[in-house]
Image 1 (tube, chains in turn green, blue):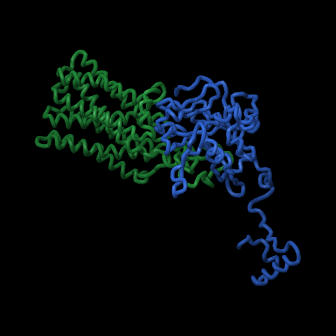
Image 2: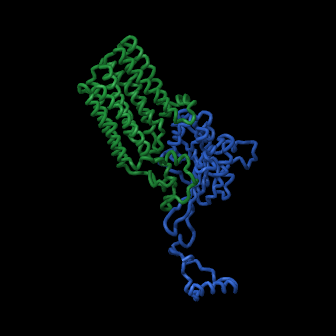
Image 3: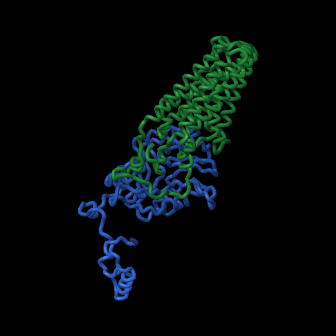
Length: 313
Length: 266
């Protein structure tokens, strides 16, 4: 599958933004973080920037970005529409919570309710992003029970890494945040590893014989293509750049998205390292997630490519 | 609305005969010509006269080599939207631009509301939807919705352009929801099948399988390889035989028997 660059940026950025919103909200709800003005301001400004920037970036892959507002209409059936609706809906309780936090330094009563709503809505948004991919039976590597959980946990992990950096910059106590980030990084690494094991171990069910219905006559081989140059289907579904380097890129993703961020987050607790360690964790994780997302597309095989000679999918 | 109609009054679709299709591409070119105007128009190509020409076609004809050895055969395979009864391309659409018509079951994209997110093309296992890089919207077979109900056309032209163009009668158009319709009877008689039924999208379009071979090979009375093709040089008039003899003498091989059995060009 062809990775739309804007979609990779979008899912990475908005994933971190939504994850940060979840942790800010839960932190406020349970009184685990200081409801000081600066953490609220910096935290929500960054979360909104990541989410909004991601959403804006996502319109760049549309053929008609000026019509993007129409995507809010079909939430009854479409996960893509649900994602859009939920992403915008999350901003309502998040905005109220942010206002209460920044102007009143309050996280109780009404604000506690909005904090709970923000966390739930942000989680639901992350889940629907994962379901856009997981709900497509045409792409075996995406149609997996772990696809959506990996998206959610990676969003929460990157959000926790951002939260750790914010707390470090503001000089707030953050032992809990750092360990939360490390635990989530470990969990997401485990889930991603299981996901890779699963897509590698699974049999390819669909063949060119089944796709053409000609298996009753014997083996089917492409003789003449319908066109001389690759068409949209081949350019979009047949894209495979990086697939041959999948093993190496998986190792790179494991190092950049999981090993380095976990180590740097741990180091950030050491005296004198602080924000530098937390920043290194975030930069490395962002790069690692970009590799992971690229690979998520490059390793995906679409059933329609059977008509163009793919042996199985 | 991307919610599907509970039932459609008709199930208009195509029946494609893989036995008689000769792969002439007339259906594909005729489709492109008709649909470059009207409902789906324009179907603009990128780099049309350059090194990498490509653009949306709503119908593509593949050719496959099927079977093994002398029993193998060429099967031409036209591929377009199957107007599924439960099209995932419609339900994934975030804008409602993709929809299935309740009156006749045709699956359409409204080019005025499509945002070009391409998710529908990801959802389709048949590769039937193609993105228009110039207009930024998704294109697909409309079953020539702007022909089949068009009262400005003579009655015999009120069928999809591909069906009208097919010189071998390999394409049939009709209501597959009506068991007594000619297309439904054709499907029943010839054992028409669905493509990738395991996805559960219930395609309306059906494919008719190639008929079994009726020659000596199929009857088992002949084994491969078949007899070498006669050279033909010793047939014909005196002049032909003379030239054939000179040909053999110059090759140092004057007996016609020595030539027999050699494959042409050997």
